[in-house]
Image (cartoon, rainbow, N blue to C red; front, side):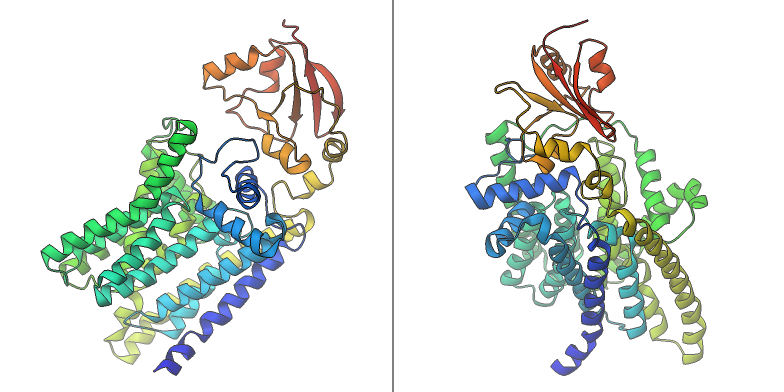
Amino acid sequence: MKQNTYLKNLNSLVAAIIGFIAIHIYTKYSGVGISPDSIMYASTAKSICTHGSLITFNGTPLVFFPVFYPFFLSVILFVTRIGTIAAAPVINGLLFAGVIFTSGVIISKFKSFSPIYKWLMLIGIILSPGLLEIYTYLWSETLFILEIMLFVLAYQNYMQKHTMGSLILVSVLVAISCITRYAGVTLIGAGGLMMLLDNQLVICKKIGHILTFGFISISLLVCNLILNRLSTGLSTGTREPAITPLSKNLYYSGNVMCDWLGLPHSAYPYSILIICFLLLFLVAIIVWRAFTRKINSIENIVIMFAAFYGIFIPVLASVSRFEMLNSRLLSPMYICLLIGLTCWVPDLLKGIKLSRQIAFAIPFVVLMLFSEYSLAMTDYQRYDDENDYGVPGYSDDDWNKSQFVPFLKSHKDIYKAGVPIYTDADEAVYFFTGATSKLLPHRYFKNTVDQFFGVKHYYLIWFNNLNNPELIGLQDIVKRENLTKLYQFPEGSVYEYTGQSK
């Protein structure tokens, strides 16, 4: 029996190794992509390892993001003594391999297991442009997605045993997920609904398990939020009300689904219909299986999470302000969505004659192969582009080969002591020079804008190739104040303001 289990997951191991190699190929030119979030994570990890504090590169406590991913990076930094950004390609490659392997283990536990179906799913995961993007950046989703896969396995173990030990295991895993990304609360929702629909739990035990699961799962998140409140007075940082309606968020989500399915951009006008159909299809499967008392299976855990996450994120983005919904924000549901939309096919084929199996299976396999071919072409085009300049971000050639960055690195003493330095990218200043600067204020917060214009002497480091419309810009400043240009380069300039207003 054990030998069969090992053989059944040998292909998962092979696929995991391929996934690791894929991340190595994408990051070998200039390392992982570095975004502002990446610098926040890396600087906090260094602070934890060096000082045992949750202080970011700009000298403020980590509040906007939960604590576990920087802590995870700090542990690796402490053990290996290799810088987080330098180690990131290997870290991400191992995490992606872990995701692929656990996905294969999950599929192997399906009641209607099919080796062909499993390989199609594993290839779909490896070729996913969305996942390849995530795992070529230093982002917390890299760890969060693995935690989702482990949650599925842990919850399946709980469904088989219904013991307090198995319940605590899945609850602790969910608790850790909630402090990896705040979106981990979707695992609480999915797990709670699965328990509510569980037809093998008597009502008294069901209530007790749901309460236990909820209490443990939310515990670490509550502690994180209390710590944030005590540190800064804000639980999750400054959050603005949403300005994007639900219809637009559904449209953006549908665009992502089109890309994931390998559909052309001409399908975008139907994006709302596509996302609504996919989510309703998942919900219908759950309702049907609950009605037929077939809810206790690992497939249903996968489907429940995909449906819950797919509904939760667009709704939340319509209440709290997000960046435009994109593949990164929706990526945690990709694997569960892929499996959820297709896992019924092996079940359908199981009880019919061989001739009908072939008749049904061939169109499905052809459709999957066509979709994966489209994804492979997208991956190749991205590789061809990035092989020339690196993964987009602060590690690509736009920055590596600029004249401005070496100047900032070698002229750290051009600023007078005690005079504040402002910039439109404080994380870039830190990443390239190690210096601390102040981010220009968000134009939506009048108090901070007024405070900035009340400063009588400051330096301004301005990067030309960045465009953050939420911050006040160079044009906004020069309309009110006379800036003296000290140094100018094609990529940016250094200015000084000495109190002369217009």
